[in-house]
Each structure stands twice: as C-alpha cells, then as structure tokens.
Length: 236
Image 1 (cartoon, rainbow, N blue to C red):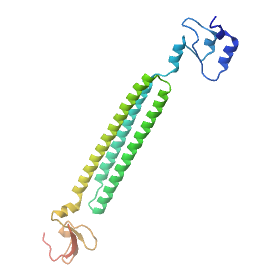
Image 2 (image 1 turned 90 degrees about the vertical axis):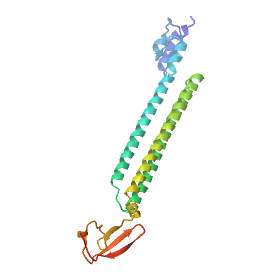
Image 3 (image 1 turned 180 degrees about the horizontal axis):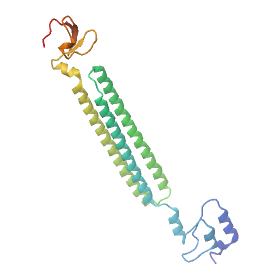
Image 4 (image 1 turned 90 degrees about the horizontal axis):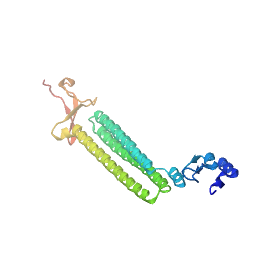
C-alpha cells in the first residue's frame, strides 16, 4: 500500500511523458510498480539507483592515464621529427661563414618553436585534466575526490618531468649541432695557419695549381684579413 501511489495512471503517464531520463528505484528487491515499467531504467532499491547514476571514478582515472600515454607518444614523435630535421640541416651545411650563421639562427628558431609546441601541448592536457577534475568533484564523494586529486597531482608531476627531459635532450642536441658547426667552420682551419685561395676574378676556390698560370691574380684569405697575390711561377 505504501507504494500504491506509483501504480497510479497519472504518475505512469507523467513519467512516460517526461523528457528527462528517469531511474525508478522506489521499491525493494522483489517489489515492482507500474512506474518501474515506464521509467527509462529500473533499479531494485534507491541506493542501487544512486550507484547507477554516479559514474565510476576508476573510469575517469583510466581516461587520465590514456591521455598521458597519447601525449607522451605525440611529444616523442614530434621530437624525433625535429631531430631528423636537424640532422638534415647539418648535412646541408656549407663552409662560408654567412651560411653557417644562417643555419645557427635557424636552429635557434627551431628550438624555440619546439619549446613553445611542447608548452602548448602540456597546457592543453592540463586544461583537460582540470575539466575532468571539476566534473568528478560534482558527482563523487569527498574521499574519492581526494584520491583522484592525488592521482592527478602525480600525473602532473610526471608530465613536468617529461617536459624537463625533452628540453634537456633538445639542448644537448643543439649543443652537439653547435660543436659540429664549429668543426666545419673554415675559419677554424684558418686559425691554425692555413689560407683560403680564390681566383681574383671568378672568386672560385683554387685547390690545384692547374687552375692558375703565371700572372694570375688571386685572393689569399687568412684568419685575420685577406690580401691579393700575383702568381710568379708554378711548380707541380
């Protein structure tokens, strides 16, 4: 008799016409009412209805972990792409000083772009975590929320560590590229007493005595300046 009100036709029609999903949990394990059959979902007890309504925090935690894995994979792929790009740039380097300076500046720009890209990725991921955390706080008890906050803080720390490791690797790669540039720089060779000889008219580098003849004017570049020479004789 206590549940008879949920067998009324008016109640059943009101539930069926409602646009908001309704969970029926007015009875006990063995009790059924007409409201149970017209509702969107039936639960045996009110407490069971509450359990069906509130999502499981473990599902959200699994999503957090999934986001973390996807982010790490994306950052690693991006880092590998930039490393490959830097390798290609090193292969294309030439001796003239101007070209070396241009490539060095480009490496600096690439490093800055990579840092900004990683920062944006981390910012987006943090925003997703914050949004999920707010939704979780609205639906779960305080104890479960505390556990979730601890997990989120742990993931946040791991993300920071990943960021630091990536930046450190990038800086090491940049340092290696700079050392390579210094090694390939022809000016370093000139500092050891060598000279760079070019044709005074064509500016082509002279590497063989067959390229000149007596009377030819050549430019001799040394570590600190350059001067013009005239070929007097040739010996092979």
